[in-house]
Length: 267
Image (cartoon, rainbow, N blue to C red; front, side, top):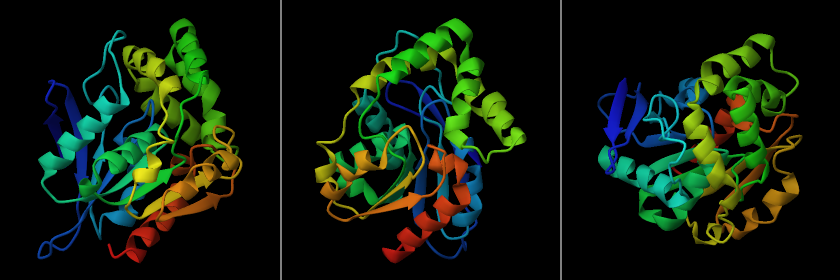
């Protein structure tokens, strides 16, 4: 089921609901939040693992996918993105949700869990970013000079790893990241280097799972070990592979680990 939600500032967020739970029981909700230059389609392979047990909701973050594009001059902030999620969860009126975020989507969901603990039952981050990188500014230069497709192709090998097929590689470039509005990307990337939630994670009190890829070059395993232990009720799992986008490159494995985590905490 495809739906749309309007934020308080007028931006419209597209989302998809996949619910194959028994109609006679009240199902808990899992909200999936994607990373930069993606959409709700990045979670497609995860849906079969969850939709029979949970009400699955996949959101297009503002500016991305089928949500309202943002202008090149738009003033992004992490607080704004978190507020979008807060408004959306309250709109769902389903009680606290299970949050699953990937990459910068993990940054958003971890900040949300720290600031609004009453809205989150469990939290799972797939290679979540606790701190932004200066390389985002170089990405912006390439996108401006060469276009979004060139950037997507140049970064895809590291994102999906050496085992990705040509068909998979091309789909991500042509049907997912290559469709991102350039204006959204250029303004969003200006915000990325300043992102830093390392001081916020200590306030996360819900059960938390972090999955990172062992061979990924984007964030070293040591970088996670520097802040993950500060989340009191957290677990850290490493997926072997050379892709830095664990949720996209290894969806079935990550989905199974996340589902087991939720079930282990009473979901």
